[in-house]
Image (cartoon, rainbow, N blue to C red):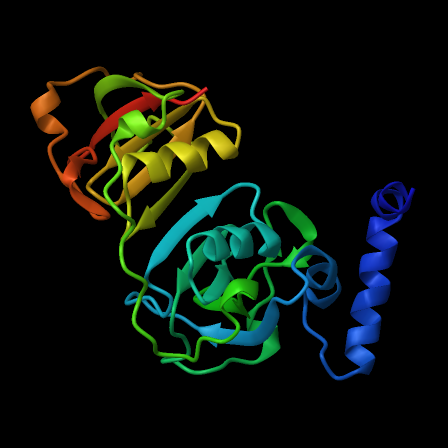
Length: 247
């Protein structure tokens, strides 16, 4: 019954929580939302970014981006901080703030997944400390890469071959970049997000979508770049996707 009540009145409860946090001096653009969605996630403020990213360990963009979605991804990947930027981008890392803090007005872009929430701005991160790493101070070393995993460890995935890509993107639903990329990591992300295909490219990039192959198949030798998370596995190549069916 409580769960039904929460789902029915979620938006009202979120706004009330936001007002209460403001009264307590803990107001943020998404305070009420995160009080329910992430519990112990901590809002840190609006921070400047640059070409050489402040949060540089993991990046992805999504047409359904929300602070909760970004926090969940960074938390699941073991990072201490999550930043949403430009409405649809998510950045993860274990240190932050090298370019300084900005005024809250610089983080003024609505989220692509919920226009009632704020997801950073132009070269501006709405920054959070993730729930799972609250005891980790800034400037710690990144976590070690995951243990070697063969794609066969994901039995539901079927390897389809090496396929050409362009700047129009063959798999164009969502993409992200990760210094710990493996086929299993990409396959799991695309499958969990409800997509049918996963493609790995350039050693560290993952693309998801529900169709593939519009630029044609290419020789398997074009998908020969070692994965950033396991050099014993291949993760595509230059403008070349190692494509898997994941559903």
